[in-house]
Each structure stands twice: as C-alpha cells, then as structure tokens.
Image (tube, rainbow, N blue to C red; front, top):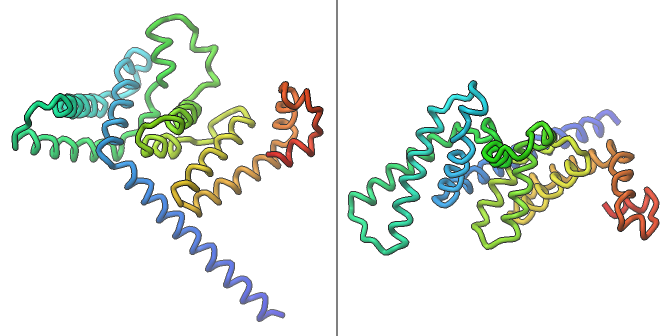
Length: 241
C-alpha cells in the first residue's frame, strides 16, 4: 500500500514539474510571437498614445522611457510609410531601421504600457466630456479584453490579438461575469495558437471562478432578456457555461 502511495505521489510530482516546464516553454513562445516587426510597432504606438498626456494625468509617471519609445516608433513608422509609397530606401536607411528596431525591442522588453492611462481615459481627458470617476470600473485589463475581441474579428495580424490577450489579467476585472469571459477568451486564444497547457490552465481557472461566483454570475445572466424569455433555471445556465 505504501509502495503504491509512493508511486502515485512520484507520478504526481513528475506531472506537475512537466506541466510547469511546458507552461514556461509556452510563455517563451508567446514572448517570441510578440517580437515581430508589426507587433513591436503596434506596441510602440500604444505606449506612445497612452503616455503622451501622462504627465498631465499623473505627475508620478516617469516619461523618459516613453519618450524614447515615442521617438523610435514614430521614426520606424515614418520609414514604413515611405517604403509603402515606394520611396527608394538606401543602405543607410535599412541599417537605421534594423538599429531602431533593435533599440525598440530592447526598450519594450521592460516597458509596461499599463502604467499609463487607458486609451479611453485619454479620450475622456482630451474632451472633458465625462468624469473619469464614472468609469472607475474600467481598467487596462478590460481594455485589453475589448481590443483582443476587436482584433479577433478583423484582418489585422494575429499577433495583435495574441498580444492583447496575454496582457489581460482577469483577476483585475471587477465584474465576475466579465472576468469569466476573460478566462474564456484567453483559453480559446491559447488553444488556437496550440499552447495547450496554457489553455488548460485558463480552463481550470474558468471552472474555479464559475464555482466560486456561481450565484453572482447566474443571477446576472438570469436577468438578461434571453434567459428571461426561456425561463431557465440556475442549473441550466451553469450547464451552458
């Protein structure tokens, strides 16, 4: 009996170690996916947009890093637009592009766009149309979720969707139903990219959250018109989720 228990325990430890190794491997693959030229410029543009008014909104935000990213991104974008308009680029231009791309990649490695205001907050601040206190529930993770869904339904490079998905932190989304949806989006995206261990991990968190917030989530859904019309029970709603 003790021998059987020891063997079972040994297999459990080995499986857990293998899972952690595979998750780490997939995380590295995700990071590599986000280092392509298009995605680097996209990330640079987002930091540029979110950091431009940062000093006005939060005096504690340091903008030295952002200033460098802004300069590199705009320079690369200018060269890309020039190439698109069939303007001839010399050898020095190409050397400059590779150099700037390397610098942008290195700077973005430690940069976190989420320390800056959200894009929605920037628009509201520019227009003064809405008091940002009314949108205290809106944060970077929710914005990443919205953008991930937007890119999923467009012809944009798939790496844009992957980037936004990896930036979603479901735990930082206050509404349980939306948090559940965030886990579903992450799991589905990782599955499509064949990152199966990461997808399984998200599914596990999805099920844990569904069990923990069952009353809150089903209560919200049962108030929606679709479920009101069909008069479904709590058990039927959970089964569908």
